[in-house]
Length: 123
Image (cartoon, rainbow, N blue to C red; front, side, top):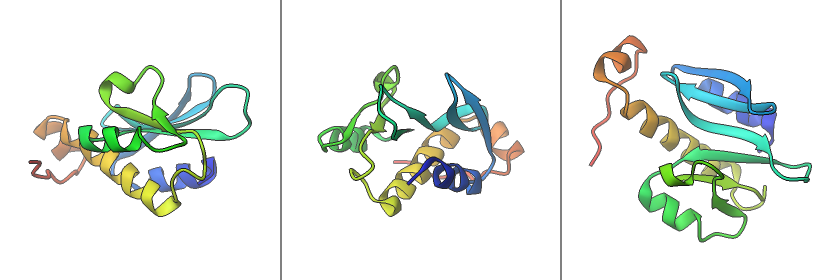
């Protein structure tokens, strides 16, 4: 998934906003809270996609080649996909959906309602 596809997908999710910050990174938020970003990393020309994930997903994903704990965000259970072949687009979309849901689910009920988000029951 390239940056254009990443931006289009994130834009399709409910109640999202977009900013460019941190040296041109494409940063996606829900309710003012970041759930995913796309940026350059190191000296390579490819782009890396980072996203929030569950504790379980974090442990599994960090064991896969081409996926690492996200710099500066790992303590909050974020991963960074550094190798574009590490995850296919369909799986990446599912993880972006989950990231959006995790972050949206942590917003207050009033904020969720104001954004038109449906509350999801989490176990």
